[in-house]
Length: 348
Image (cartoon, rainbow, N blue to C red):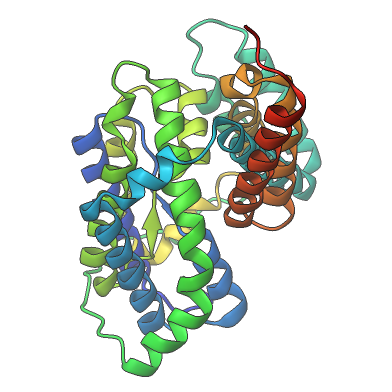
């Protein structure tokens, strides 16, 4: 919001609307998050508001086409289990690495939050995450690491239509859409749908690849022209919310309602309000959630010969990106299958 000059009211309203709609439609604790590659381009390449809107609209259209035609489902069914496990392992490791990085910014708060979370999560039915965050906020305030948002006041804001110019559309396509599209298809659609079925065996199929593509596409096409960030679902967010107790669609609805209040009444001071949470405490949450995402059931269900495929997929996901991890993992699985057929005889 600060670097690209995005209006806080529009960004928060977009997240609020998508979150509430997600909770009502799916009835699952599916997350809504900014598209990471586009966020990185905003921070490094300085995308203007019109270019951000163009990126969201273009990706939204692609997701709608893939969802309506059913092509996204065919792609998902063609991904071997070993490759899917490798993608989850890599994404989980990335979350854990980010968590460690955030903890290092305020080490004693981060390590303290991590220890408190570990202790509280051993107590059945204990709301560990809210207690740990509240304790970290109090500790940060006492030690002066975080400050009270004394300047927060009601500042109403309303969304306004943004119409990108053709030069903005072309620049956005080159530096934002192309890098983001593959990440969205893998992490936000395919892996999220797989994780949903794993975490919610009876109802997780509601969040199918086709529906996730359609809901993300509709949200971006409708909301990005009004200044929302390009948004999607995500496997990491789903793992995090499930890890800390979320089980129904009420989770995104509550989150969306809070952001809606911020968007309408406190948009200009949202950054100061979010800064009340020490960044080290956020890092401790990411470590727990990343561990859960990485160590999935599929990681242990595979054959021993699949372990190097899982490892290779995870390595490329961590060092490059999930899209290339998917492609190279696919190739590695084809090689593994050929070797098994050639040198390991079938049992009678």
